[in-house]
Image (tube, rainbow, N blue to C red; front, side):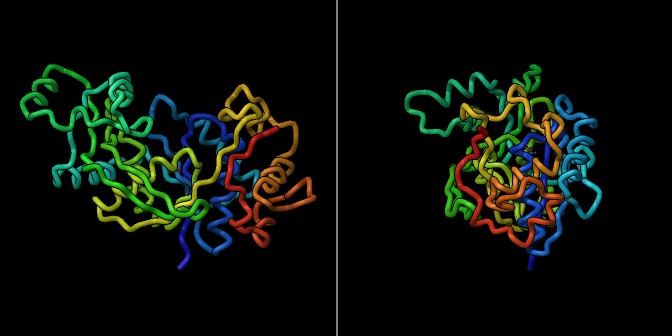
Length: 298
Ligand code: GLU
């Protein structure tokens, strides 16, 4: 059976070349197998999400001929689903309040004995007793909710990078500002939308062990993964606004010329300086041709 695909942008700005390339690969992976494809708007963060960015992102995808099967779902309209999943985790006794600030976590995780990956939670609040927790909550301290992940290690297969393995820290499922966390929402939605294959940027690969662990806790069906290498600016740093020419609107060329550039970067449309629409790439598409390292814009 074919595995439905998705592209799940956060509407915090226009899509840059790295995101457009990921969207193109996700679409080609799904459509080349005759599978469905949806776009999901990950707009849970009220500070960063803007409807005008959503509109620009969708228009840019359309300009490249990337289409989707149903009206894009918005995470901000699916909060009950996330609460339901939280209820299941709570019933298993797996949630605990975490009062740590970012700075405290950084400090604890970088202690000399620390073997944790960057950004991993060292477990500071995991063993607070019930009375301490209650007192701190009653005193009005801000807290996030974390899952006690029990130091689990997860092995998985990435369609582009082969066998992978990673440690699951106690990750956040509700942020200190009350917003449902990305890890929770993405897992719930991929299952609810019957996604079979998750294709996304390589910067999210470090989240995959957490998400597989969460799927198992919530008894959701497994999905397969492919993490698309990032696009970097000439100096090797992450693409940013200062790079100019990083979004369709900033590029001094037609979307069809940008599509040709993206196609070349995944081993397609050799010798062509325009590709009218993504569908023209379907016959030639082969994941084996996608370079496994980052694309550095020159
Ligand atoms: N919303 C995430 C982002 O824009 C992507 C989530 C995912 O593909 O799993 O970075």
